[in-house]
Length: 606
Image 1 (cartoon, rainbow, N blue to C red):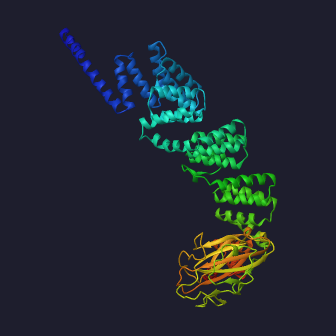
Image 2: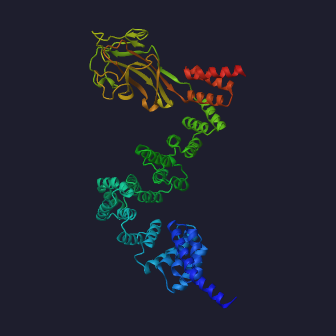
């Protein structure tokens, strides 16, 4: 090539090179604007070919590699950068720490902590490192380092997330002045932030219960009622949406009583409320998904009863207590726990009817039909027939003079000797209402007495022999029933109704029997007084009606019904029809009769 030609080519390249580099630089800016980390790496490397020791380009490549999780390549880039810098650099150390944390595969890395700490020594105002140190120490409950880093961070930045964190930190330390100070700052600087919206109602509520919280702290510092007070404080924090403190207190309670289902249950709900239902399941082996992200719990009555039963089971281990707890847990959706309690109950007493009945019910729901059938058959092999204490035609004392009887008439010792008596059904005499006894309504048919009273007594030697009692009642229009002075039933009638109060509305299907089940504990051993008040819906009402059946139900009827339904679902129509017939022989029920007829229809088709 002639010399003149060679000089021309060299001159041309020297002129075009700045243009090419300028084009790459503009491409790099566009890639950075779009946060295209892959493009940043490729373009920066091409620029680096011209200047391998460009510190700015090396930093950009390292940052992009870190974001792409290209940890091996990033480590090489940082090593090269360190060799050029010849001294420790805060950004390089921070990225080395990030890589170490990712390489550890967990949220814990002493190497990462070491890198970040050295970075902060070089640049004490490096907020990105402070943020990582705060998060790291918070996860590992370092109560000494976390406040130190967080205070520095809040001094350097005005961020709602960090303000929220330092408020919670000061709440943990009960620094009430600092809580007030940072709450005011959060409200003034970020009134519309999510953190302010979440904290504002919690702060207002906190001020109301501040004294109680101080009292609990004082008791705990003295070692008094540790578990109870820890859980009480946990629920306070839970209601205030301060989840981390709530979880910490509940976990401390579990450390003290590690075998307590009562404590585990509360920890599980608190975890689920905080959106950690899976952690609760993994940690405790219980299902709390129904409480996930919801500020709710089963209620104080449930938790108090659970604690009481736990103590009873520990002290006595009775089948009754185990079954009662199993029923509570089953209603809460804790089926496996309920079955475990029932199996313990049946080991203690293989013929314990309530355990067998609940066990069968649960197993039907789990489609374990053989286990359910065995339990139901065991009930039928030992359980007696139901007992009828009151039926239609029963003789009742009544008072139909429109007088005000107050509340004394409901009690067991009230003297009703002057009241007239007559058999049911009792009514004004229209249709079949007065088929037993005709009642008076007063001198004015357009303004009848609002209230009529009835009383009777029944002798039940041992109510505990029955699983429950069934009332079958006809009434028109409102009714209240008292057993030994205590209210047992109230329907279509205001709670504070007086003798001049009318029923809430006209009752529908007044000639139908309404069924109400009551627990066996509603009655006492011996003589029981049943007092009833019937209220008209209006003064011009044309009729009144009252009649009653009272059956003491054993588990036999329930077992026959469940067994019949189970047999029917399995296609055993002949066995099912026998179970339903046995039920009907003991007591007529329209629903069971319909099932009985359905079995016959299926047998005929087959």
